[in-house]
Length: 177
Image 1: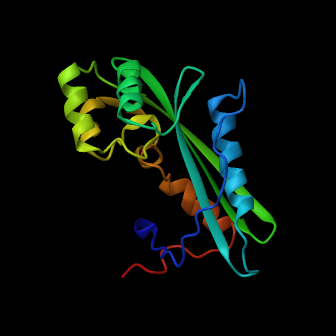
Image 2: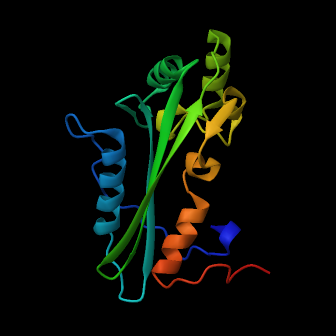
């Protein structure tokens, strides 16, 4: 947000059940959760809300935030040496109007040794991250190739966020020197 000169005045985590529906595809899941978050927050008439969600998809499999270290290790082993998709959906809401966008990026993870996985798990960087890793942290060393948006893989696609905020009439770049 600082990149585009937007200050955050309040953080209100919505209470949304993020359980995937049976047979729900990863992109549809990510869009549904984001839309649910946008609708779950109570806003004053002049407020603008930005919400987002990121999921990792290995084929049709949704790899959310691992519940523990063992699940994080399982996710990393599954993605080792393979390509996966990182899907980030964002929504901006003002009043009853919602502007939405999703970004799909393709990521290749190198073949990981057991030692690399264990060392990464020790960093605890996997906690709270879709797919059990964050490209902006130590796991960035595992990613030799991406096709798509680096900022979306990190969790907030900057260009798309700026575009949606502008569509909602929210000024960007106002807090830059």
